[in-house]
Structure formats: C-alpha cells, structure tokens
Length: 329
Image (tube, rainbow, N blue to C red):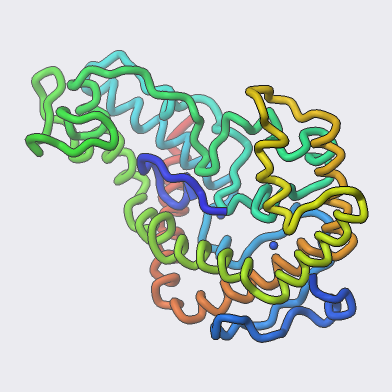
C-alpha cells in the first residue's frame, strides 16, 4: 500500500526496504500481464505468511541493522551539533543513546496484502501489533516534536523563519547565539556526515519508490491476482464473510472501528483468522508476491543505470557508517 511521507530525516539507510489455480503454483506465474508490460517469470512460493517474503526492490533499501545504526548515529551527530552551538534543548526524534524502534517495514509487507500472518490475525485482528503502533512505516516515531523558538528551529533546520513544511520568508541562513548555523542546520550537517543526500533522492522519492508503487498497482490489476481474489472471496463466503478481496476485509473500518477502541473484538479476530486461512488455502500471498515481483524485475531491468547509482550510494553510506561507528562508544 502507498506509504505516508513526512519531513526527510534520513537516507535510504535510515528511512528507507501479494488466485490462480493451484496446479500452476509449482510452475510459477508466467501468464502475460494485462497492461502490456512484459514481466519476467518468477516462481510462485507457497506462502501462508508474508514473513520471509522480500520483494526484489528491497535490495535497494537498508537492512534493519543498517537502518538502526544510521538512525542512532544521526541522533548523536545532531546532538553534538546542538551542543557545539551552546544549546541545551534536544529533539526527541533525533536524540541518540537508544536504539530506534525494532519495527522497520519500508515496503509495508506486514499489511501490503491485507493481514499478513496468522499470529497477528489471532491476537489483533486487522490492527497493528501494539508494540509497533508507535513506529511509523518510515521508521520514525509518531510523537509530535515539541514547540521550538524560531532560533531553535533555525539551528535544527537551517531556516529560522518557518515551521516544518512551510516555505522560508527570507531565505537567509539563521544564527544561533550570534553564530551562523551549518547549511541545512544540524539536520543537514548530520546528513552530510552520513552521506545521506544521494540515496535519499534516488530511493525514497525517485526510482525505487516509483518501481515499488507501480509494481504494486499493476499486480492488483493483473488477471492472475484477480483470479486469486475470486478464489479467496469464495472461500471467505463459505465461512460466512462477504468481501471481494483481502484489502476490502482489512479496510472495513465501519465494521472494525466504529469507535475509538484500540482492541480488536472477537468478530474481527475471527474474520482475520478466516482471511488468513483462505489466503493459505488458495496460496494468495504466494501468487500476489510472485506477480508483483515480476513487475518489479521488469521495471528494474529497464532502469538498471539509475538503480546502479542508488546501489553505489548505498555502499558509500555503509562504508561511512562503519567509519563513524568505529569512533563511537
């Protein structure tokens, strides 16, 4: 599913990484796509869960370990910059010293095809595991930043006369304590130290993002996936649930969230369990994943030069992370 965006905070290393007759599963999905795009065949896995499934484009996104280290180091770099300018405040979104949230799912695999694993369905229905609710898809916490003075905002962002998301009125580089702040503020200084700028542009707003989003939308329209939906829907109907596809079941907010309650009721959990049972019975997850992978592989082959640029930038960032980590406790 499309992912929300917020203020750029880090690179691809910190940010930014779904039936067909069962007789065809062993042979893979090789039917021609419906929109004229030629997709490379991908063997269809037998998948009762999304755990362990990694889309091809994920090779151009960070591992959990890389992202955690980059986020941690970025926080320390921003903290150092703030202290160097004689400031005592700290932005909780970038404070170093604690590992970032464990949940890091830049491609939203946990919810990409609706509910994605049986344990989640049994315990939480169509809701997110409470342990992960505070972790956003891009790896940042959902907590609002505290109010800052114009001078403090200028130190962090490099633009004193705006709030995040608002254009600068003067365009002048701000000062803090009578001294000019770094270009881009302490955020910009940290990103430059981590070599973040190149892959962030290539991965989180450009080539990688386009390939990911287009592959998902094309796979939803593909006749193989539509056939999977039909078989899944028939299975659900036999269990007493009437939905055309898994996204409709997961997105039935009028039924599952009529009020502000955070806990799933027994009906929601039972429906989510039936959803996963039907996905397993018709191998919907395996088929959808294989079809989407085909579209991604085809798009990646056509944009190999752009992706090579992203890959080189990621490698440079990894090397820089190792250098910075070696000098830190």
